[in-house]
Image (cartoon, rainbow, N blue to C red; front, side, top):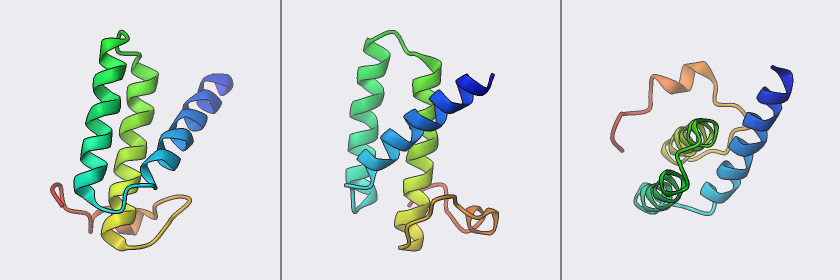
Length: 84
């Protein structure tokens, strides 16, 4: 279980670093869709898709708040609209 969490965290961090190159939500959405399509073409590994989605949400929050976070505070999540 611990190894699985480490792999998930590592994947999420890798995707987050890619997403941090995106400065707008429009660019972020395009990059997210491109990576998601590639993952689905490769068979749709659920761990990779979950990591990708978590990193995407994290970066959306950062863009909206105009601040970089290691961990998004719980108090911030309710401020983030579903569509930015």
